[in-house]
Image (cartoon, rainbow, N blue to C red):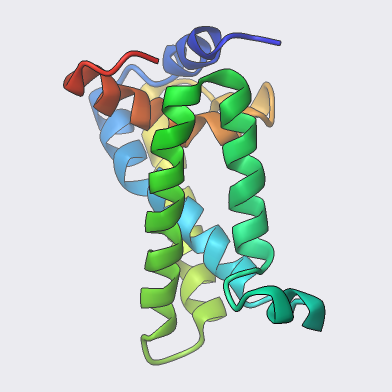
Length: 155
């Protein structure tokens, strides 16, 4: 298994252009939130609802993602727990908007991916996930690693 530094370094190779980086700061969180919102709309078994109204496909996926991050870096995984909470709160906020949560999230998802591909056009390199789908999980971690470096937090 690659180390977190290897994953982040390899991801960073195709994310050098300023415009691409800026678009990733906007689009990666929007993609995660919109995907979470789409999953939020998928019905869950009654047994899930009996355990907790918060137990759904979104929270299960976010929980699995955090476990994936813990395998790479405890400190980054703890930051991703906070990000996961932000994602859930964002979905709850989107749910309160007029209109269909699913439609809103599909729209956000499409627009954010267009932004990602525009960024990679400026970069002149294909998105990393074309090489390995695991890079879809590295994008949020890559952003968080910048925050950690600015704050002097080791990972």
